[in-house]
Image (cartoon, rainbow, N blue to C red; front, side):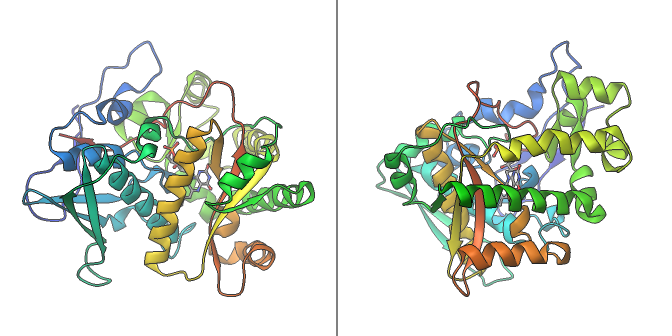
Length: 364
Ligand SMILES: Cc1cc2nc3c(=O)[nH]c(=O)nc-3n(C[C@H](O)[C@H](O)[C@H](O)COP(=O)(O)O)c2cc1C
């Protein structure tokens, strides 16, 4: 069966984003099709498609990739957010999804400079209910140094080295956000982020939201290349043996459920530093700007050989999380400020993680 999915276009001409056919089930467990966009990045003549092919590698919550894209005339792109990809339980106000759109816009802007273009962006050109951004490509940009790191950037969801950053690294990253390096504060945040992780895990509706987006094994990843990829030989073998699937992952009495906890706790505790991005307001433009800053931070950590991993649970706005949300804001935010992003920061594994499986779109 050939499965083909088209994203809705924001009107206008030209660009079609599609997921192509499913590749045959090969001996390797690598979901080649789902990784296609990483291989395709940069292989387009139209400077807008060139820039978009990098933008769609942006970090975004649960890898939902909610961008909708329309090309207009020779030099305009209209961007919107696909609301069918909302995460109503963990992101009830679409704050995190909007941050992900900011990451997308920043990668687009950076990649445009590699072709000499400025991506002149107007947010919400038709008001709050219209498209998210109008972008016009104009001549005259110098290449942004961060462009070289787009293909190597990852959200590093792995155990970190205990090695700490030196003063120069901390100073340099402090231009991007608030770096937490004091040992007692780090220990406090390890505890808080772990408790928040457990709240999300033990709240059935928020856990279910993640489980429903899990793609178990190569075939599922290639068929639905978005969401949370549970790939690799071991997870796939567990899936084939019937030990790990959506049902067991959601069942608190199952081994798979407990293994989820056993796997994540040491990872979350192996954090030598945290970094947080805050904004004075919490409107859509502030959230988009936070996304742009996060993308630049993640590219900068990549350039520095460091790993960054968002741990967003304590920042999520639902009732069960309210106490931890209040705690972290009381400690780290001035009245009225919002902590938009919180990340584990340090040295990641010697072999960096592979690109995230499960990229949905391919520019054709
Ligand atoms: C606003 C936002 C919140 C995120 N929160 C988390 C999180 O709490 N835990 C996590 O493991 N990853 C988180 N991520 C990372 C995404 O899961 C990741 O970007 C996506 O799976 C694509 O992977 P990549 O960034 O390695 O390309 C977040 C990303 C964004 C933009």
